[in-house]
Amino acid sequence: MLVALLFFLVATHALMDYALQSDAIATCKCRSCTSPVAKAVPWYYWLTAHAVLHGTAIGVVVRWFGFGWDAVAVLAIAETVVHWFIDLGKCEKWYGIDIDQAMHIICRVLWFSLLVSGLLGPIPQG
Image (cartoon, rainbow, N blue to C red; front, side, top):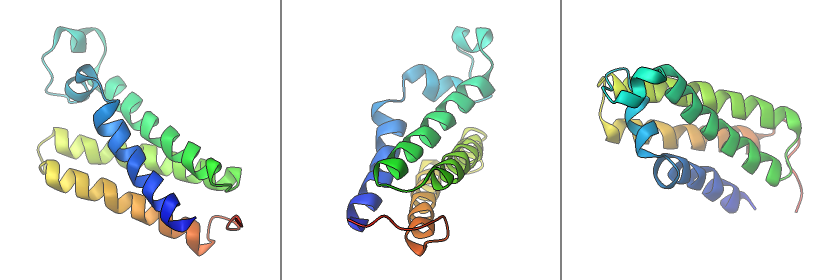
C-alpha cells in the first residue's frame, strides 16, 4: 500500500502539471503573461485555480487510500498553498523548471512522510 500511495501522490503531480494543464493555465498563471485571455482574467486567478487542482488531487488520493478527513483537509490545503508559491517563484524567474519540479516532488514526499508517520491520524490497514 505504501509504495502505491507514494506513486499516486507523485503521479497526480505529473497529471496536473503536464497532462491536464492547459496552455492557457500554463501561460496565464504568470504575472508576465501578455495573452489577451490574461487581460480578462487576472494571473492570480489562473495560478490559484491551478494550485487548487493540485490540492484537490492530493485530497482525492489521500481519501482514496483510506485516511481521515482531517488528513485530507490538511494536505489538500497545504498542497494548494505551497504549490501556489512554488509556481509563483518559477513564474517570477527566481529559479528554473528543474528546481520548480524538484520542490514539487519533495513536497509530495513530505506529504507521504506525514501520512505514514501517523502524525495526521491513523494509518489505514489493508
